[in-house]
Amino acid sequence: MTLRIDSLALAAGLAVLIATGPALAADGNAENGQKLFFGTAQCKTCHSVKAGQKMIGPSMFGVVGRKCGTAEKQRFSSNYKAACEKAPFAWDEAGLDGYLADPTRYISKIAGQTRRSPMTRKTPKAQDRADIIAYLKTLK
Ligand code: HEC
Image (cartoon, rainbow, N blue to C red):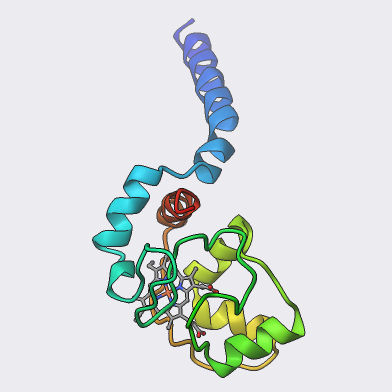
């Protein structure tokens, strides 16, 4: 009897995991993303969130949906430009996820040659990336 209850509980637990698992991975928390951006992820060292304000990197205002290479005043790296010419892209969630995980790898793959990205910051945790992307989506 105990065994049966345990396995029922286990099955229920699994069902909950299956139902909520993917949604959790895809849904970012913008508030936490903002904290990361200005805190431990250090995006603010190189990026402003004000429209058109270039720092070391381009402004993050309006970055979601922005076409590659079109950020105001920014002089992009030659490898970024090569990638953008070869396969023009606009930043969507999937692209940002790949880029934030490993900027050098993401851009080099599109460009077809490996060059170190001047955006040196990697965000290895998927949940952190989802949260940061959720925050970037609010910058419009
Ligand atoms: C050391 C400075 C630096 C840090 C830290 C940094 N970036 Fe960048 N970022 C850059 C530079 C420089 C570029 C332009 C890349 C190029 O020219 O290849 C860039 C490009 C980008 C782009 C592409 C913008 C566009 O218009 O194509 C995004 C998105 C981005 N950064 C997000 C972030 C986020 C989010 C963080 C924090 C996790 C971050 N960056 C941390 C320097 C930085």
